[in-house]
Length: 252
Image 1: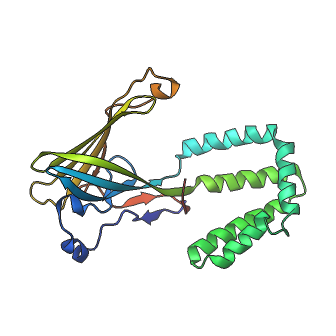
Image 2: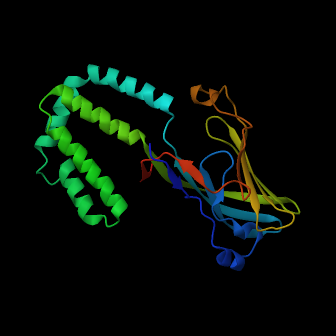
Image 3: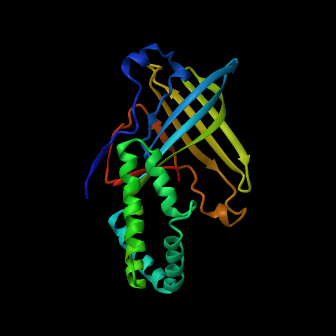
């Protein structure tokens, strides 16, 4: 499997960073120690020792391990045996309607015409090849094989997505800001987020988030909540990742 050196968590150029005010205003794509994500924030002072921050977290979901992939393939084989006739009927409907404007093939042809980057065009062409191979099948077993192969390709796609959230902070020390959010929701979750600015250089922040408490007896969804397991974003974390992604996809 081809390894791709993915540098998605980039810092701002040095010249650009020099122009930025430091402290709470300097957080731009801070990489994480604990997962494949980076955090940016825009903060403004709202009073004496108080600030409001809007965060954007960008996350990369890597492909499963080989062991997990093998299990997923076995599960797919079992599911395909149970759902064979239905899958065959659905595949035939999709292929028979390929000349219609709302068909999968028409959508792919439009995507190929509209996407201008070579990377996106290659991805669309692969999807067209997969669909044409599926539609060329004359037997149910051929159709199953093509669907399983396409599903395997999908599992080797890394997903990139983002989420935003806003928090109010209080200054609790010379270089420390803390936000306590909650209790909230069915599980009465309390989340604590802290921003620590480096003592020697306030342009180098560390952000820590933790689910500090929750009522794990409030319902089935609350029982599995992890408590006191911090997520940390820091300028000390590595910015590069060596991945085995065969492709990237924006969105969940």
